[in-house]
Image (cartoon, rainbow, N blue to C red; front, side, top):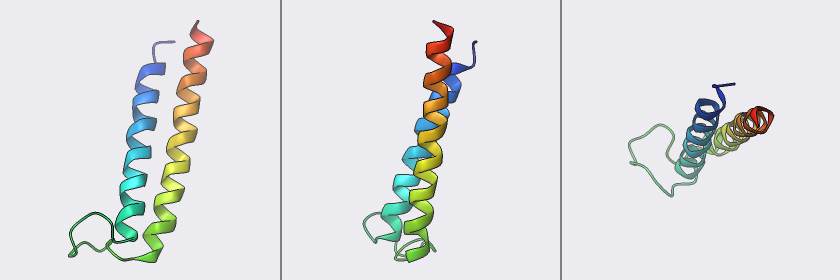
Amino acid sequence: MRGAKPVIITGIIITIFGFIFHLQGQEVVGPESSFMYSNPDWIDHGIQIVVVGIIILGIGIGLNFKKS
């Protein structure tokens, strides 16, 4: 199984983007001109993206353990 490392990296990247989107929705980071800034919908979307990233990360870790 050579695909474990790219899946783990993808999960980490998606999780980081989810955190950024969540923080933009809460007016913590990002430019004020962004459509995500101060938008309550992006608080929820960011959390959902984080969950998807964690699931993908878990799959990658599972593949890594299966490889061993």
